[in-house]
Image (tube, rainbow, N blue to C red; front, side, top):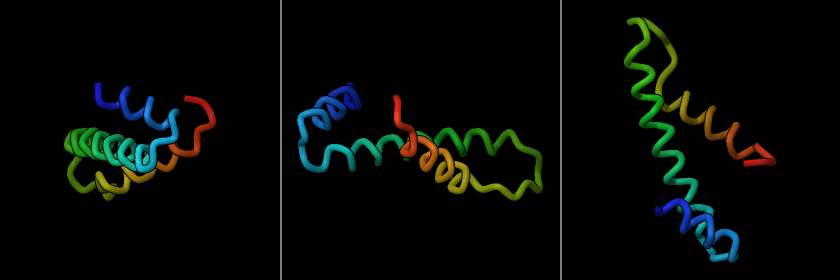
Length: 65
């Protein structure tokens, strides 16, 4: 699995590995947010990007995985 490999690289201190992981995680969060927003009633104001951004910020602030 790609994420597992990247996590191993992060543990080994490979430059750029954390950035690659962040990009993958953010893309997945944005995909999930788009799907969630499709289920919301018409007229809601929250956008998928805002939802993905908030989730990403909360994830990177975690001390434990």
